[in-house]
Image (cartoon, rainbow, N blue to C red; front, side, top):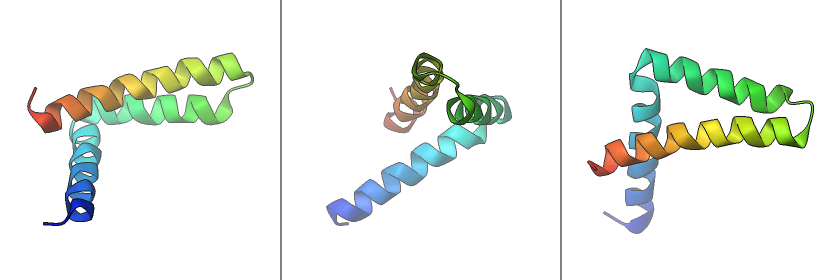
Length: 65
């Protein structure tokens, strides 16, 4: 497996981890919409932080930590 293949597999696994749990998938969509609809940079940052937390959790699951 090449490095590119490994990266693609990792990204796919994170994508699946984010969407496997219906509640987490709903939360992700909610915060993605909040980023898109943010009226200020501070609102966008707060919503982005929440997306980041969900991504961090998914990454930990993929790594098995």
